[in-house]
Image (cartoon, rainbow, N blue to C red; front, side, top):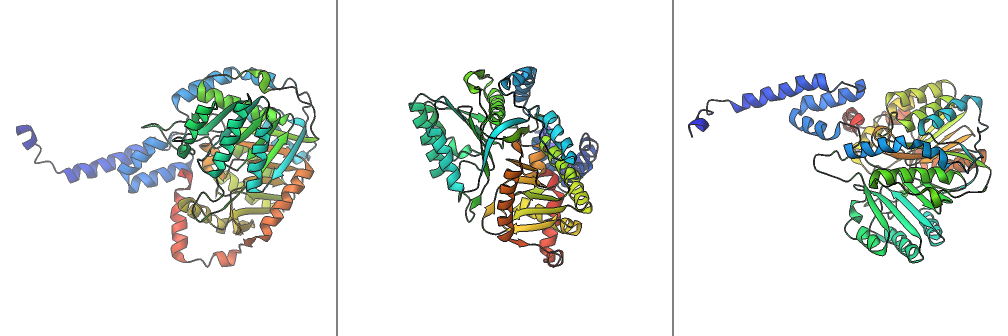
Length: 477
């Protein structure tokens, strides 16, 4: 009691006030270490106004590295990278694509970043019908003879997810080996019933990046990959979930279905992620079968994420934008750029390139939507043409450069996809595919409102203020 009484003289308000300033001054030294000035400024502003909550958030989410166990597995996997080369030994049709000279540096960069070869002899379809995409995936699963591999950020326990799950069960019943990787946070709703049902039927299901106390939540595996028998693959933006899974929103997507040697690259990414999730290396045979030419399309796969030493997707996008000479069209649901991306778009316009940005008129995430819209005035001043798509929430993620290159995958044009998420992109060096994608982009333009700088500047000051405050947090979103 005497000890307790001896504390009566302490002014706890003064202690709390002093602790706040101690946090501010300490973090002024800690935060800028190995961070860009923009990111450091955002963290310091948050901590300055809300020292204790800011410190708590910083402690949980500031480190963009992978969990220690996963880092050890990745290091072990990297020591086995020589095997990745062997995975492509059957695919001798590797080709330096006939792209324009100014884009060649971007092509070479993609090879070095992802350590994935450029592969000729592919057939690729672009698929834009939401339910039609699910139908095609189910049909391919129903035709599988050896194995089916799915890697998804969201595998939902809803009508769409159940239809795919039923196809997997049918495949297992025929003796097909089915393996599924799901992000533990994105697919958390499936873990109660859908995942146990799949496991009971014989489907091997593993969670990637499980959620644990005192472990950061925002490093996620955001990829969407399907591989069937090592011969057919899908990549793009669409999750295994109903198109209307968010209230008041209908999602519109874009996927690429591939047949040919490039499927081996998608398989390679799945095999690597399987190892990181399970610590088990899958057998090379029969996952990488000898494959004949399926077409004449040249393509390449680029994985990216915090496990790599560089932001692979960001560097690729910037290199391709710098190489453009005529036209750039970026389609993304989330556009929260960093300075290098903004500068690349600005210099492209100054070179006379016709630059288009297609975004959704409606946002499905309030804070991200506000931050995204804070960049519109700057982009319009640069001369970027912004199209606000009205028909649905456009969740598709793709990029075309001139008439030469199409990039499609899971990556958004935001700092989260560049630094925090495991993503996957397919780079297609083909004029016909690019023309097909441009036809879709023209449809987007027709079903969008073209934003004008004069009208955008007339938005209410309270809206502008909210957007600018959200922009301060953009490096943290």
